[in-house]
Amino acid sequence: PIPAASNFIRAIIEKDLSQSKYATKKWAGSPGDAAHQDTGVVDTAKIRTRFPPEPNGYLHIGHAKSIFLNFGLARDFDGICHLRFDDTNPEKESQEYVDSISDAVKWLGFGWDNANETNLYFASNYFDFMYRAAESLIENGHAYVDEQSADEMRINRGTLTEAGKDSPFRNRTVAENLARFREMRDGKHADGSMVLRAKIDMASPNINMRDPAIYRVRRAHHHNTGDQWCIYPMYTFAHPIEDALERITHSICTLEFEDQRPFYDWLLLRLAEPTEDVGGNKKPGLLAEPLPKQYEFARLNLTYVVLSKRKLIQLVEEKHVNGWDDPRLPTIAGARRRGYTAAGFKLFTDRIGVSKADSWIEYSILEDCMREVLNTDAERRIAVLDPIKLVIDNYPEGQSEDCFAPNHPLKPELGKRTVQLSKELWIEREDFMETPSKGFFRLTPEGMVRLRYGYVVKCTGCEKDADGKVTVVHCEYLPDTKSGTPGSDSVKVKGNIHWVSVAHAYEAEVRLYDRLFKEAHPGEGDKDFLDDINQNSVQVITTQLELSLKDAKPEESFQFERHGYFVADRKDSVAGKPVFNRTVTLKDAWQK
Ligand code: ATP
Ligand code: MG
Ligand code: MG
Image 1: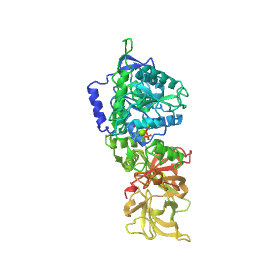
Image 2: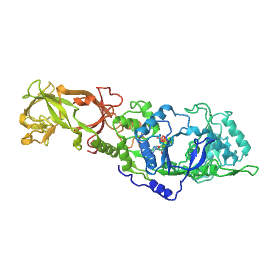
Image 3: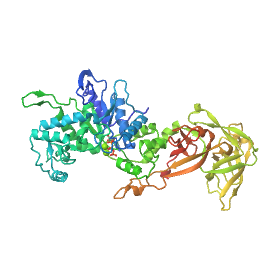
Image 4: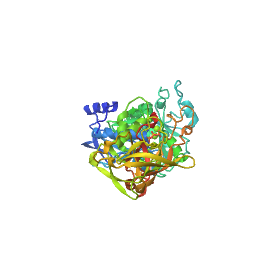
């Protein structure tokens, strides 16, 4: 395996480990439960990272970058990466998304059945703890219930150049805040009528520190907790707590959360510090050191696709594509059906690296990675995608013979398979030209060409229909020239074409996919991204394939010689009748 290139996050972890910053203790019980306690035993995991998708859509290629980063760091540094469903927002979350995310993570090669502990978590299991944490903030004067309207709150938040204004509710007593917050929890107040806010600084230059909302009233059914709650924590409050409860050491997120980091640290410190009640009794904090730290990296931006759940949902719901796993979509499910491989994604994420600077990655880099992996892994097969008949007039009628085609030119150990040659063959329409252009070395009247793994043939002419379209090409073969026999190369030819015997062909549906968007930056400027959809992103054709492809298993990938890489569709193939998706062409057609 290629060693992962170093990056700034690895450097931070190496330093932390050298200073034993995270020689943490192993905890008993589940995060958030009363039984969750320090056992005094040193944690076997040297670091803990997490991949925290919200189950409100399917994962996309951007998520793959985060998955390889987080799971990869845990693997390389003897740590554990948690797959955490960040399901604290009841709207738009569903079991279908939970399942599809689990599938995608597994398919990329990561799991959650470590020998010692599970690493699968649901943030909604921490609602009780989050509620307690909110009350503790109130008790210590760090939070208040605000009854301003949403508009008032927005206006009073101020702007980048102007400090915010304190809410008239900011100086309520602890008792009053606690009572109100409990009423919110008990369903006494309408959705949107009030929020719990952290009490920090309305004049902070960082707007995120101007008393952010941390709990809101929302009557919505939750996929895990049902109707138990009518208040839900805000993401910015929930996320640091989730990390701390799971004893995450390095919480890695994308750059747009950089401005949230001060609140992340503020919150965890408030919840970790010991407190004193009115009687002067000391109470330990709700969270223990060492607290997690947040680090930001640049998200993946990829040309010719959209990597936003909102836009992907729109493409699916408005039926611009056929479902979440449409092979043209940049979802992991779509890429998988397209024939992209987990190894290809690994190569891609290693190649693009991890940095703190936002940039755009060319889609062709991803395709190159898929090509590289498939070139090594995929066996070769023969496929005629745009068939026209070639008749060998001097070949005996009703007879056929074995020809031997190597399964993989780079792996002779994979051997050869037999393909049948007979009098009538399918060849590519573009391999014949009646009036050849300069430099055309394939079939042309009087010209000679090698039928790959077979004989040299000499073209004798063609038949045409009323419109002048060629329907059949005729040739004669040179019997002494069969590939692999002595003296076979006595006749030198420049062209070498592939073919499939008509009597031994598998007629199959093949889908030729192209990019879903015709622009590198769909929707750039004030355009609607839907206007940049490529209307010709799929072409369904009837092809003639070598017979062995009839037995291809769903998800088996092949190089169709001279064409590219194709995969047997995992959804539409039936036993004995696979259909194929073009994964990627042999060369980058877009670089022409
Ligand atoms: P979207 O913004 O499209 O709704 P999201 O970021 O909200 O996606 P989450 O489910 O919250 O989606 O993402 C889970 C993890 O994946 C987050 O930690 C996030 O940082 C990471 N992630 C999401 N998109 C990208 C991307 N384009 N590149 C790298 N990481 C990403
Ligand atoms: Mg999100
Ligand atoms: Mg996002």
